[in-house]
Length: 362
Image (cartoon, rainbow, N blue to C red; front, top):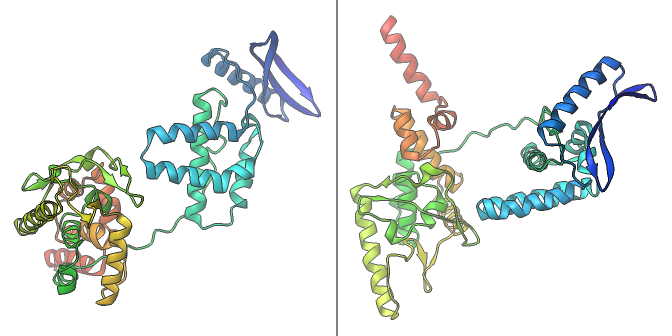
């Protein structure tokens, strides 16, 4: 069409096609200067041409979001799907209610973010979910731009991960009561390989190749199978010969239990399981056992994930292991992830590096 003036503001108006026998049009936001509206008209025309003059019905944000959630159920891990659905239903759905998705502007997004009286990490997560919903709307031609783009989210202060030293880990694994736990082999694998808890819960005997594991799936707190975090998570995880002996003993013990119960033991059985029905252990079960035992014997307070995986990466870096090797051992998607998480300098590393340098110049 053209550029039109209304209430002292200039608008670009562009035809987008015909629907139900009627011409459809799209308006830009209002501009104080006519030349700005002319530029907006050019961009609108370009967008219309690129999208094949497609015109969709006016739908609410919630209409699009519900379909995005349905799509996520089929395309992401169950735990990710539940997380996405939770944030949408608890923080986004009621706020936008019946608002048309095409009418929502950056100012509306800013006001939504300000309205969330939550921790910065929660606000940031809700904003990420909302932005993905708008990206989905763009892919379906319900929007041409994402109003979340460019809006600054709250700064999230990363807490320093509380890790354990090799001496503390050795002491924990050698406590008599801990060695008698049904989850002791799971602890051994976690501490000595740096595997993620869900991966360890998902290990089956078929995944054990003698000297290494080949992870296939994870197990979440609801005992559902989950996809692993990335492609590298399926790489071989090698084990020490001493750990191998513990796994071999567990294999024989489980086989005997199955025989006593008249059950058929197969390679599809889970390595880390619960009696009497041999269900796989869950990450929540391992966390609860870890917290109870570490508190009882007065070990430094930290999470299971930090004590096992973060300690594994941190201690390897302190030993001056090549970051590329550490990245491969932890099955990160890239060495950058390893450097971002484990190349932080603690007091001992600082002093060692300083001494090495000063020995060269003094």
